[in-house]
Image (cartoon, rainbow, N blue to C red):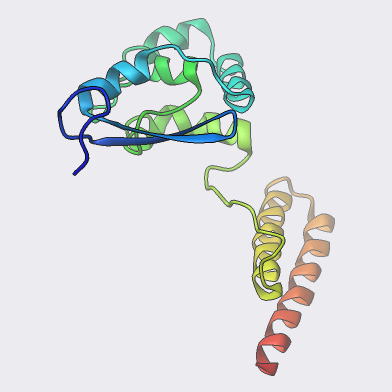
Length: 171
């Protein structure tokens, strides 16, 4: 077990920061992690943008009530999350689930991370990724009651599924 980078206690939080293209690893104990997470730091442009969107989507009254929500694992408050634009630990998703779900839906349009498909991925993987995207678009079209669009997407899905099945038969 690694020791904390700032004191001699065993580390419980491992952070990799990329500053100016150089990765730096930090190993922190629980108390140093709380101090690290509470300290204001310069944010990257992506986290700046995310924090800005978070602050826009919550009113002042909601902000005060959110300040009292605390993750029992890492000690970060929901208010700190909103100001920094990043969570303290994976348990925060459960601790702040009620407040995070509408924010994530508003900002990303989804609550489930889909990720990206590398350009060098095999063709079969790219087709599976495309199928996942099309099914998401189909769900959205049905939710919006745009049935003409949903029918076109359904046809695209059927064509792509036929391609996937026919290429799988050749193997």
